View (cartoon, rainbow, N blue to C red):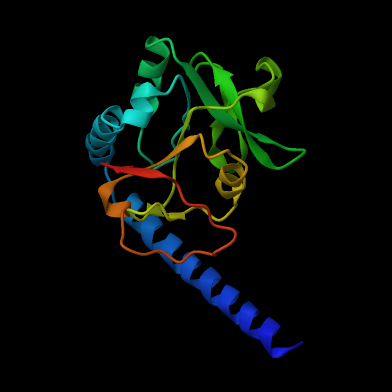
Length: 199
């Protein structure tokens, strides 16, 4: 093994270790939030999203069903439906191991997905793979103001974001305690979002 390969592997190991430490840190922070904290902060996230022009003008929006500690965006997603816009939620395609945006009309028929998620039943959704949203709400454990994102380590959103055309507005969604100046990131694998809203 040559010196260049060893140095590259050392850098990748250092990035991986730093990301693991950061994940543990932010998971501890989120676990300290009470239900009241999450509700209050989620309202601030809603206000920030509503004020974002690219979210306001989007006709098709991919949201997400919140995990424990994540901003609860369900109410603003209901408003998307009330405004007669298309709402999409991600489902994991087990064959490709990729996120696929699927149209939904509500939250009553979601099924349990991997990693304690809720997702649409793909057999009930029409041509999921052919749907392209105008805007995508992206959860994460932490973000920087310039759009760097720390995910949960499975790579689903990084792979999904990498495949999107530049015309799609990607919006990181988090609480203010998750917004930091710098994050460890792999230069070729970790994908930035174009906008970040924090509550």
